[in-house]
Each structure stands twice: as structure tokens, then as C-alpha cells.
Length: 230
Image 1 (tube, helix red, strand yellow):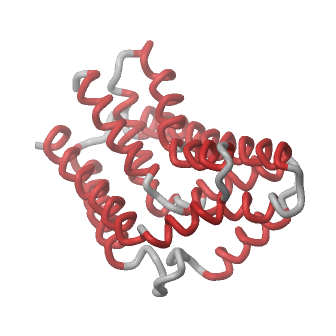
Image 2: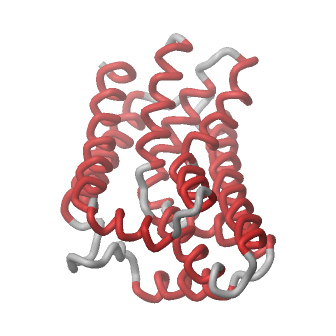
């Protein structure tokens, strides 16, 4: 595959992963709880480290999957494995459209085990230093693995198909791309707005978020099928 095809696939995969809502919800919780306890400057540092944690785990996961493909798949996924990934993308898209949010017009609670959701909420309330914020960012992104697992496989496969001098740059760029919504929220709060407004926007536009995420997974599935399998 050409580098252009690989980059296009990676950008589409990054947009798809960035549309997941758990990391954004965790950062809003962090803001909401931190601004009531700390000075604004400290809250900004906590948010910064949360975003760094989210980007770090994404970068490490991409590198891990590059290692796995390089050592167990002879450096490239076969068409059969890509078809499996396509099937997972289609399933994830359907879940996004139908089940991603729990019922409730004024809620953006995700369809995750309640014990796990409470654990993240508890950690967000208790986060008081940069290491804890970094760890919370790691945890929130890692918790999205049921939806991002196949994405990591496809991204790593693309990176290994690229020119060697582009591989590390692309891996870092992908990690940055996936945290753009978090960066936008940070800028939103920094310019004088608050996390409550951001949460109200999420509630108001919940249907759009579901449609966008589900469509992104479906488009990614079609793109991989068209350019990597057929």
C-alpha cells in the first residue's frame, strides 16, 4: 500500500477513536470536581496531565500492536484478519447507534458496567495531583479498548506498511489526533467558559454524537474493505 493510503486510513481511524466519549466525559468530571477544590491554575495542570495520559496510552498501544503484528503476523495482517476487524467496526458502529448511551434525555452516561463507571467517577473526584490526573487519563482511554482494539490493529498495520522514516512520526501524530476533543475542551475552559456548559452541549447533542461515532465506524469499515481487502 502507498503511504497516502496508509495516512488516509490512519486519519479516518483517528477521527473514529476521537469520537469515543469516555475520555471526554472523564475530563469533564475532572474539571467539575477540581474547580470546586483547587485554584484554576492547578486545575489546568491536572487537565494537561489527563490529556498527556490519554495520548501516552494511545501511543503505547499503537507501538504494542506494531510489535505484535511484526512478530506474530509477519509484519502485515492478512486479508482474513482485516475482515475480522471490518466486522468489529460494523458491530461497534451498530452499538454506537443503538446502545452507546444509557436511556435518559438528560444523561450522557455510557452503557458500561456501573461499577466501572462509579470507579472512574470516584477517581475523578479524588484526583488531586498531576500523577493521579495522568493515571486517570490512562485509565479512561484504556477503558475504551472494547471499541478501539480493532482500530489499533488497523493503525499498526498501516504504520508497518509505511516508509520507515514516517513510522514513529505517524504513531505520535495518531496519538495527538485522538486527544483533539480533549484539547478543545481544555481551550474551551481556559477561555472563560466552564465544564457545565460543555456537559450541557453533550446532552443537547447526544443524538449527533451517536450518529457521528456510529457512522465513523461504518465508514472506516467500508474504507478498509475497499482499499485493503478488495
